Image (cartoon, rainbow, N blue to C red; front, top):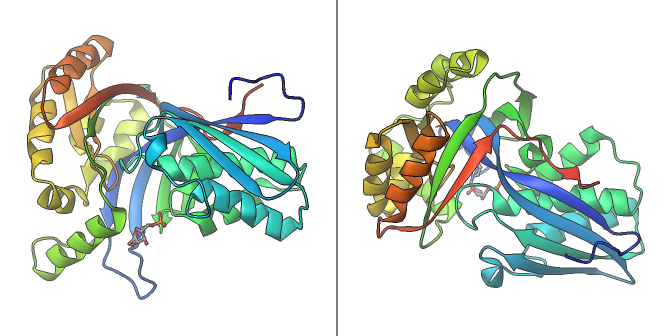
Length: 308
Ligand code: C5P
């Protein structure tokens, strides 16, 4: 990763995401839930480097949680490289080196970001004739959050979250992220959502609140804070009750305009009025025993892009 002198290596930076709104419809026959979501890419960045090698796809990872991640075909970044090799009949191999800053199993799409980074880096390394639409299609085959990691910025997402429409937004948003000690399984959170819908405790719907769209159009931080919503928050809190105190603490802090569970969790994301409120909140959250670490990030930031 630190070896920037390797001739043909390509390095790509790729961001984490927060869902500013995540509405979930009832489980479909395909085993997925239709979503209505608004993604924002934030400045927690993984770096994916692709270097030529003789054969196969090799992966090494460093940084945040890297030691607990598989480096074989179970890793989405390896699958991304294999998908391109197969589709384009590439005979050369690739060595992928990933430096992680995005928390793993945290609801911030870190694995998806790495896959998006691998798609872009490998397509450049092998000089493939991929159009943005092609990369989007490969990304959607890999996972629901992979296309947005390529796109970045702020976007509406429907379907599985892979059908995206970029949004023009105003403003820059200061986030404080409370990371949990242990990750949460996305399928498990969706299953709990299904149980709660079946029990009549929740209603499945994909309607994104107009308040989120209006706030982003005008750059109104306080209005956005009040409109944030996530249908997976109640199911995740039911699986991990200690998240409730983290959410309550963050939301009640001075200078915080809103907070929500990020994606399927367990990371909690809080929107601060400005830098100084964000710094105060970071200190307050750090003192909670349920919180493993706190990160600050701002958004929106661009999607996957090569480092010059
Ligand atoms: O697409 P991805 O592999 O990221 O999804 C992981 C799991 O999350 C799926 O296998 C499914 O159980 C659940 N999921 C869902 N509805 C979606 C997205 C994901 O039920 N729209």
